[in-house]
Image (cartoon, rainbow, N blue to C red; front, side):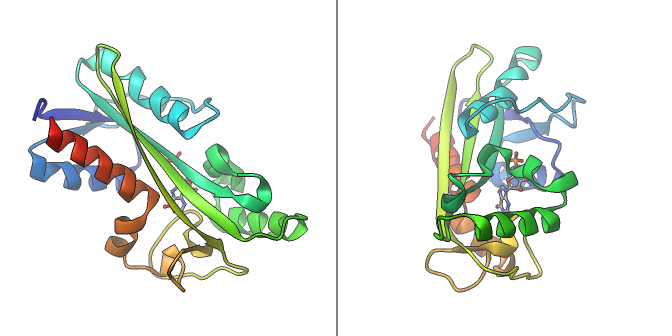
Length: 197
Ligand code: IMP
């Protein structure tokens, strides 16, 4: 292993604890941008990779240690890939219950009747000298006609049914979702990269 400390560009408590747990067995300490009071970076990119890099490349120059970030979203075929990189902003006041209503209504109005969709995630690792690595994960599935709420999940989970399943992401066990999810797959590639160093 080439480094034992990494910055994670996020203020999302759930994501921070997930990454800390994942990297602890590899002997890597995770410090978040919340820990070092570094503000959130504006997501002005047009792709998940651009946004992920915007977040991860801003911080290492200041702190001199490698930094990781992720960017993710839901892409719906019938909406030409929307909400995509705008997934968080698409939901009125970040209220995802309302965001899902908006999504279902727009799909209803669309001439394209496909229910196909996928979640994408790009994890980026930026080094202080400007080098970087990208790790991509994707999960395909379909959008249900109604919310299928469960005890878990967040965001658009209640309407996303991954291929090969009858239940929504929100109805799946957290570990089961992590095994097949876009973020889980991107993080797995990142972990394999770390172990190869
Ligand atoms: P970000 O990657 O933190 O910018 O989040 C993008 C947005 O995409 C989130 O606010 C969610 O709305 C949506 N999203 C990303 N991953 C998931 C997921 O696993 N389930 C449900 N929604 C997700």
